[in-house]
Amino acid sequence: MGTISDAESQIMQALWGQHPLSAEDILAALPAEAGWQLGTVKTLLNRLLNKGAVQAQREGRRYLYEPLIDRAQWEGSESMGLLDRVFGGRLSPLVAHFSAQRKLSAEDAEALRRLLKEHDDER
Image (cartoon, rainbow, N blue to C red; front, side):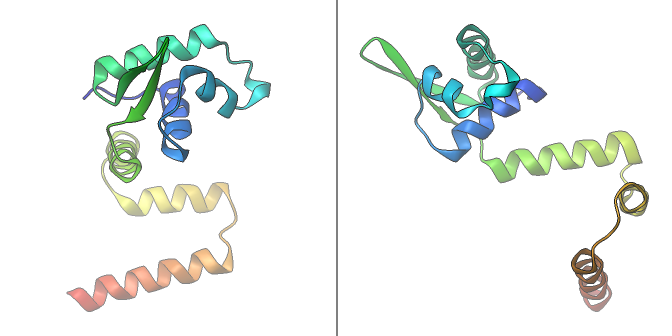
């Protein structure tokens, strides 16, 4: 399967929320302020079909679309791609970057401590 673009990922988000959906249903699920057009949604759906990310089933005069890839599968692939591409596969620069950009909440700091402790305990 090919890489899913940012625009295509918005279509996938709508489908992961509820499926099957028609192109019109997907358009209605997208943020109105983004100015999406039905033709754009259909073009992106065709790209996703060609990539094997969605399937379509004809129902009367329209098609209903369903995701073929799992959201968690896509998130894992995307996050690993970002980690490899931007941070050379290293976690500590990623965490340092995001903590410098956005204040770490007490809950996030505690969650990171627990993850590090679990990692140390597994050794």
